[in-house]
Length: 52
Image (cartoon, rainbow, N blue to C red; front, side):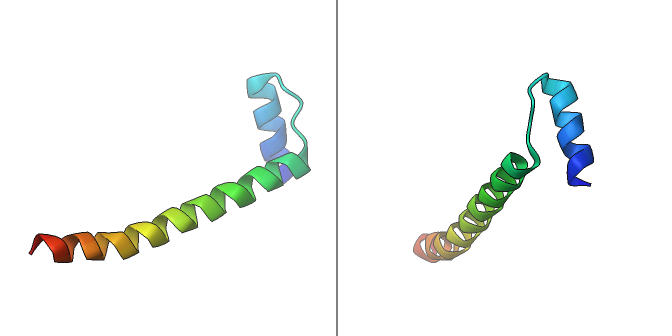
């Protein structure tokens, strides 16, 4: 599946993309999303409590 995704990205952007590069990007994107969700959950509750 990763190889098919790399081929599709390479065709669409006309840039040679490596499988390892894509894996690293996906790992950092997932970690950033997870961190953002955790921060939103923590500060979202504190913000709601401050309003009421």
